Image (tube, rainbow, N blue to C red; front, side, top):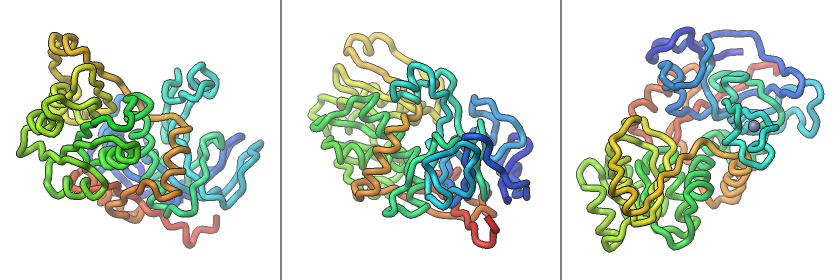
Length: 349
Ligand SMILES: [Zn+2]
């Protein structure tokens, strides 16, 4: 099989397209012919060696995959060769108190499928059968690949961790990103008033098409001032934060009293100053959020299958052009996900 991998950490140049032996499923595992794999910034962090996750070299990146079952390992029941599936990307123990109560994102020994088995920048991937979810026919391969991280992360942040309810006001940072544009769609579906920010008017216009009520250009406008203008000086009930740096502080300052800020990332500044005094006097809350639970992927798959949310695909690239795909993502000009569309034509299965 063909796979894109790297033998050392670094820039785009370390990615190599190589021919490697086909992966075969072990007991309890399935092999998938990969149909599409969405790119994520996590892939860049892993390639550069800055992810703070353990990575063994050589490494095939890619955690967000849709594929067709090519082979079943020993003891696998309930699945058939040819079914189109999407693996829940967390690898979890299945036995701890969190896993047994539907809260796999809190598993005591969490990992990602690409670490425990293999990655999706390849023609084939092997994963435990327990990870599989069926993909609704209404979704294309590319849409299904673009769904999981953006929408399940967003569901987990907005509702499970952030407790957003109908009629509340939410500020979504960086609405042009995958999880930002997903959050606009889900927050509107839930009946919230949605304020969003982005670094370009073009991205704000696209987010308005998805239902965003008020857009703020954080390069040319003062985020806190505009939030207060849009909320009659009250501030928002929830801030959806995944950027870090300046937007962390602006998010905190945009909150109403007793408001909540839910956080799942901080690429633009992972260590930030924090003023304790106004924080406790206004009784605000900061809530951490990490990945999502399996049932949350099932939930967003169902919503997408019924056309209530739309996974956004900015561009697709063949596996051979994975380097170009990553370069496009790193330019951060896209709206929606970059997806590798992997052809299995010509393979003997
Ligand atoms: Zn567990």
